[in-house]
Image 1 (tube, rainbow, N blue to C red):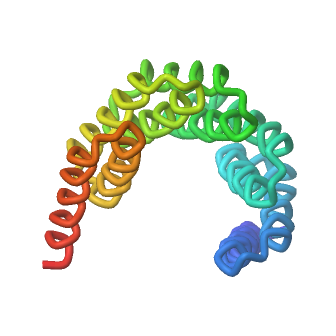
Image 2: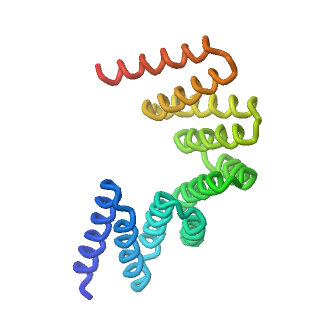
Image 3: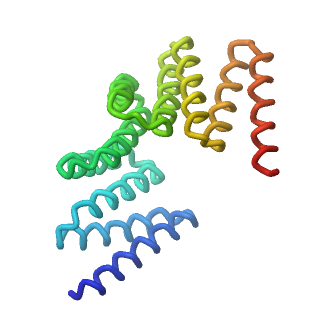
Length: 202
């Protein structure tokens, strides 16, 4: 098959998959991504294959198939490790941690998240990791660690100037403060969110 035809075919399948996801047609999206994977596997496009596996894993999570999503994400992780693509490898680890959390494997999720923290210097990724750690520690009834984690998430999102993520983290911390009867601290976080919202619309 001509290289241009292959590229166009893969682009079409991926576009169809993304469109299907956006309209909630998850089975159709999964079919499109699997077609992409088949071609990429046949012609040994390792990096593209890894990214398609991530799309498949995320779609399986939307279909409430976490065990299959985990198996698929593990396969993608092996590819990125072999290619020495560190950022893709770490993002895949984050996905695996999310799946483990969904499966109530809190200790496994925590171990993976702490591993990512040791291997990245990127504030945006650290922010995402601490968001997940907050959730893990809440599930484990460790409120001090949960509060510490969400505060660190906020700090990293501030450093990376991610206002949407910062607002999300502030809202999560406000909800946490309400559960420990600190409505005053919750109100402060909600005021910060309003300030950020006004700043964005100006």
